[in-house]
Image (cartoon, rainbow, N blue to C red; front, side, top):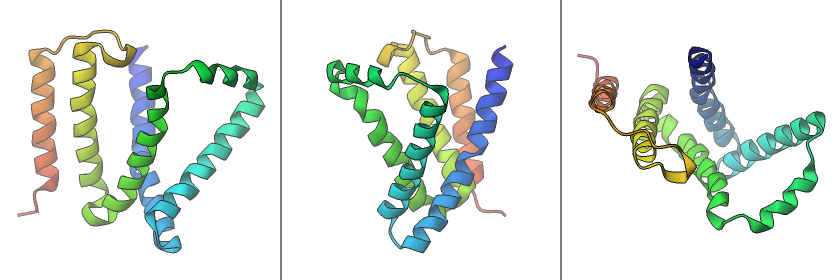
Length: 149
């Protein structure tokens, strides 16, 4: 079953450079990265709202947000940072380099979160194999950035 989840994650991950490229084009049209990101998030919010309505999810559960710790709301800020930075970076470094750098950063933080069991994630200790994977990812990033000889 894990391979099905991996395939789903790969497919969704393959959409990230598409999203960043479309958002960069939108930003060129509206001439400001914050406006491009705002439009992108607004459309995403609308899509999620439609999904909630179609699924008939209990909106009354939102009242529970009053008891949520403040750090629960940082995810939206981090999402905005990701979208905004991808809009800014993709025209400067290209889709391949940007995504390779993002994936490298994601893996580094993921290993840290797993190792210490942060943010409610089960502990999954760092291992020699994982360290080798990180090293190979950095090598891959360097090869992606390296200019053709």
